[in-house]
Image (cartoon, rainbow, N blue to C red; front, side, top):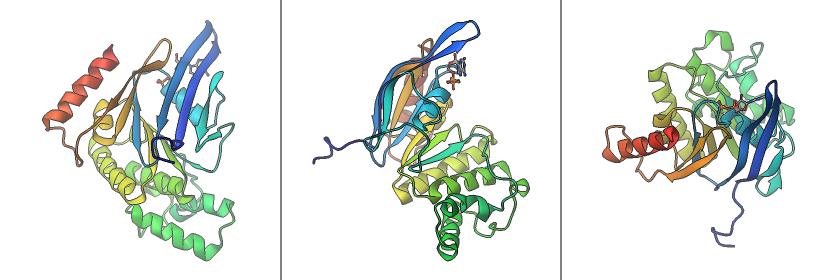
Length: 253
Ligand code: ADP
């Protein structure tokens, strides 16, 4: 089978979502279709209320669509599955577990033996730059460090897709830039497929191979833009700001 015919890692096929709101029905998503190839880094951007969170939850199997389907490696998503690594803005770490306990949680659930689990946790902590913090509790970590733990935890079970919802939305600008660079390094090192939701256009230009631009009322795809800029990317490059302006114009409609 050639690459062109290969089943994409993620296929979103005509997804729609309608909520029964207090003031009548809300069409949160309408006819969303796009695919993400293996190893690709795709960002979803759009204004507040365009359905980014709703789409994230549907892809993650946390909520059913009212029409259409999501396929992971050709299998229809009908609930949360083990082949997904989820990272949220709010970390969602277990406060009563150490860093190692948090990162190893999924492996423990899968019944991975202690020594193997400890080895994998050590590797993952090294990957996210947290070696030496295995026995620390989340309350003693900065926001950036908590998000590194969340990322290591998501990667622990070696998921086919890393699904990230505004993961760097709660940290300061400098930490955000550092985490973006680290995520790109990890992506290169692991070859993971990443689908990354953000409202930050600059972040999307810095990270993505392709950007899915959404519009609202109803939530829909306005355009899919290839970001053909060599990495590492710098916002001072002309092509960077051209792409940024192009995306901004699309978002502002
Ligand atoms: P975004 O993440 O892009 O800000 P959301 O997915 O949160 O967008 O919301 C998309 C639309 O769906 C908005 O109009 C929002 O008010 C509506 N919506 C989201 N969740 C619900 C819900 N549980 N019940 C009713 N309406 C909802």
